[in-house]
Length: 302
Image 1 (cartoon, one colour):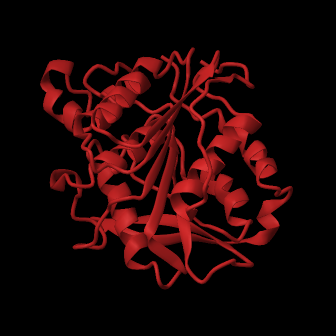
Image 2 (cartoon, helix red, strand yellow; image 1 turned 180 degrees about the vertical axis):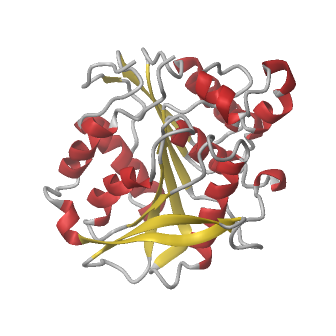
């Protein structure tokens, strides 16, 4: 079985930069790496913070990137893609490192991500962040984790005890690229490792608790789902189910199908949709976020 890898990053980082008028965005961004947001035992948990060198406001919304890699690979360095947003002077960026399944099984991953959000909110003033405007974005396993951040803000059992206590882990909006959303039916070797290689019939309760679709309620934040129609790693049925649940509960959701896209996609139109979504829900811009399908601009990777 092939690994879940966020191949789309090679395609859409440059496209997003172009969509926002940034040709060399890193030159306009300061990065603080390996900032500790909590500890798991003696294990330090860290994130990277991307700050614009020229800010357009004292308090800015933040885009928090959660990396993919099948919960077993990847790292926070892929969060450099937020550079193009940060370079505009309109956003702060954060990229979160979390424990992978080879180190700790579920629910360590969501505990770490929620601890990171709590830390960002608790330290918002220090970093010039508006604590009420925290958006999250992730691909594949990261898409799963950001979707769960969006739907489980009221689920105490998924909070964990690491990091800043008594601070909300709720987020203002979510961008989910090709993330699994029903872990009960999702079949992949990476999911097996995530749950400690338990037989499927012995992990039903954990899998349901790990499913963003299982926690949907009407007070969930706006969500943008982007998914390839030919994704053979995370079938598009996962996105369709999530979209249906969100619509049934009256959540503000936009579902963009990448026609012919696999587990990896990009291009200028995808970039525009993401930029419009964050602009609307983090900056209050009066823009429409189209749910019209987009023809794949990249060769499917899986």
